[in-house]
Length: 435
Image (cartoon, rainbow, N blue to C red; front, side, top):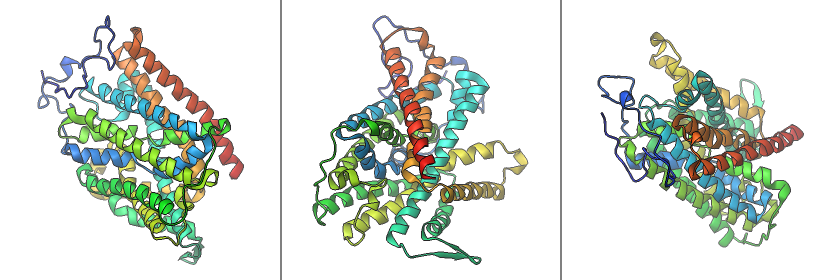
């Protein structure tokens, strides 16, 4: 039997073990006899610890870093507590995803976790939420690029075959062409180099926004509100959107050379990203108060050097993240193809068509803030909070054992249900109102 190396986060006992509770969740012996004897078992990848950290940070520190000031302005200062609460809950569910994968060495993807827990229907449900979330996040990247480029060059237009596209629409198409080469890569160890650039870009954005307030005359004079109950649904939805990388976690886990280190990867990624989100939220809200826009970069004075650095760096960030978000989608499509269609030209065509389809959606739905709030409320909360808890309880059988772990898991699920119901309703109302 293969040995499972421990990294301090035990995989053979519950995350929280009561005194009288026996460890019910063990790796199935018959499923890990020898990798060579069973080609369906999961084999280690080729990404190192640091490369996986870069990919994880890149996935977590997404465009949410630009919308957290707006989320804080919607909910008020006290809503910042909800950011840390959601961060803790999603970190916990990230550990649950790893534990579900370690229950069966054949599991490679998030939908396979759903299938192990609830059969084929579970696989379908997880797949729908996972791929919809990743798809709309990738679409949000394009919307963000178009908004910021149009803010920098408001009078620019693009002529294509006699058709004149407005500045924002033209910029979305240009950015899609720039992103295309990274979409054609399928090796996460190569994508990690792009991820390193994206992680650096996130820190540069925070530093540039701080310089804009401290040096370039904007100041930190926005007092804001202590609490705005009517804005809590939007705030919570956007906070949840910040932690929407769970569908990518199985891909990162399987790509690791030393998979026992994945829990440490999660600790590092969640701590660093949460501090970045909190810093950006506080800076943006202090600078612009209730006048903050859905993307803080849209408030920055375009004539200042630090503002230009922040805006241009913002333009780099989604380009480095887009490929990581759509990789699971493309892999799922490719895996459904017959063997004789799994050739490089077909693969390149599929990846290109996925990119084109996100461009079409981005041109049709231009409301970045409301779209991301909807993604956070309905899709991120389901895929990153509810589904990991449900799958873990079913696979481990811990729902039969009353204890502190079950209580915490149920509380996290109740929080997820609240975000899904209230946040989705508020986001849909706002989108329909602005159509």
